[in-house]
Image 1 (cartoon, rainbow, N blue to C red):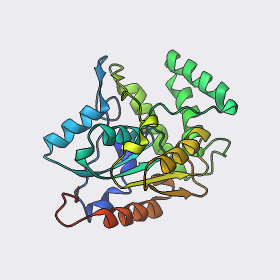
Image 2: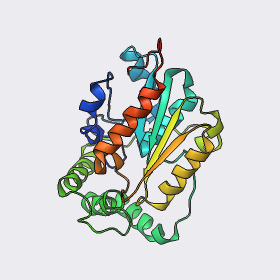
Image 3: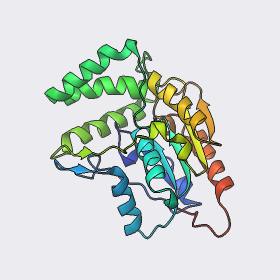
Length: 249
């Protein structure tokens, strides 16, 4: 899931995916219903432990935004656990992109975070990630916008501590050629510039990666263009399923 949401952002996809696969979605540590304390941890190890607990040896892995970055790191650290990889509106760990137009916005959001002014921070994050940079607030469905606001506020308000996720070392940005599973990369053309550049980097750096750009869509691709997104993912997975593989998860 994205860093401004939690696992409920997959509500529109789960029923369709479940017609063909065993579907597992979860809140990463510090988001949604998964609490975090002030400890160091690895998102990759958390995911591996979840799969072990559920007796899943290999799986198709789909991640969006922050979740996509975690999925990519997992593919590099535990390649034997994956059948395929779908990265949506994501950037590889360690990726850097200069966007002078947003410098002041990043600074303001950091100040609001330090002040714990969650309402104002979420207002700015919603404008950036849900609406899209420079886009009107009525561009997306009002219900979708309200849900992302509620989810993001929940994330900030509900956590008793601030965990410290440990990055993959060395980072994914210099290791894209190591990705050894079939990969689909997708993003929206109204997204923030760093994500646009990150999508291009993933699509060109991962050998054999397929890619698709959704026109007129910002960061929350699966929510904005739910039906098309679901179809594209299912079509990709159907092509990658092979007889004898544990590919139905």
